[in-house]
Length: 260
Image (cartoon, rainbow, N blue to C red):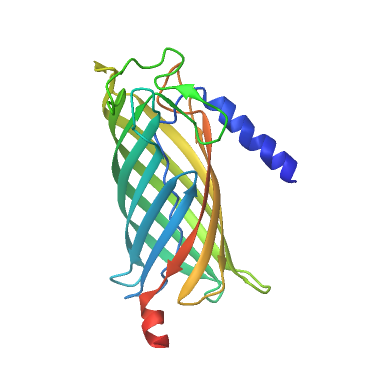
């Protein structure tokens, strides 16, 4: 099983063919189920990306949420250095409900986000050992220390359906499934100072989630894929497919106060 997973991840790495300039965020899953509930989460993506998120239910069946993520790979030390930086946020709302006497939580949601990203030199498209120049095979030409070769600002609009259900067995509290459809468009994109237009791409992003039992602080792991719904052109800022792996904590402050 491990061998097949490794080959799948390597296949994704080689299939990108260009720098993954757009970095997907981890999908949100149902974490509130009643009016007034608040949940905050912190997670670490593999590779080199951190994310913080919050969800709040101001009225029954309505969830408001926000998330921030940051990716930092490499250091801008000299003209030969390689680095990739990405910052983005996302806000959204969802309609949630429970089934099966509260054991299953279902949510339909939409979100809007914006991000900024820049890169220099060569970067790894998500997996160690697969190194390609910024901008594809032609590479970048920046020689000044710390000068990004490729800069971009993008927006995302997404819709998703998700569900988690209580799982029997020690240690596992819930299993979840998310299916997300995202549209990404670069509002501004340059390579070596030259405008590269406003490329856009649709992504289908399924994910699987595991959480520990219902407590004030819970562990969560998420495994997902982002798959382009069209073939990215050569030297594109978009990838054909990319895994999303993350681990983190989900905290419900209301439960935490009761325990204190």
